[in-house]
Length: 308
Image (cartoon, rainbow, N blue to C red; front, side, top):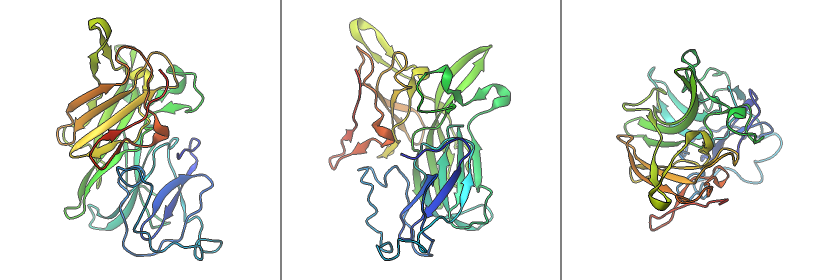
């Protein structure tokens, strides 16, 4: 998966045809060529998580090499990137310019949209911060929730978002989850939220954000409750049939945690279903190394669990 040290530069790769990504550190990038582009709206291209762009027509062994394949330019962001960057072509902005855009999320709870083609366009098309430090809302310091060394110094946006995009109307929504630390009456609270952002402007859509919460029946009439502090949302988001599916594992195997899958209506952002892998036990987290929940040909949603 993609990651970077704090404030390292993001490198853009644009493949005509259109294979696209944003990689951090040691990334080679092909020179952009003007042609029809293919959207990358979800982790690994599709809900099968196939990692296949079957419309690629340009790349071949002859033109992927020294002199024709290399870095185009770089961009600086405010935290580590564990999300797979997404790509939306031919977006008409408020100034009526048409851009191909790259969207990335960071562990500092920021979402950026960059021009995918212009090396001189160093300023983001938009940047949306999902924190408010002046009011005590920040990304989560790693040391406060786990001793695990994998993510430092902050937890924020870790899972790959998903985009619903309508090219005909030039409109769409980016669904992204963010973890925050919030001071309430002097007491720190750890909260997961689901945000729905306008793809063109980065602004919150109506009804966004919502707090992610839930519970299921446990052993002996007990209640197993989702605890934001110990849960980490690593698995890529899934958009299927107007429902958004979000899966959780643990925050570095710390504390008592469970595997969870929650479904939300994309229009209202209301929770419509919830599943816990270990309602009468613990662990059973869903990480999948950041890969998204997948869907088979019959519409079944598939995931893998670990521990417990």
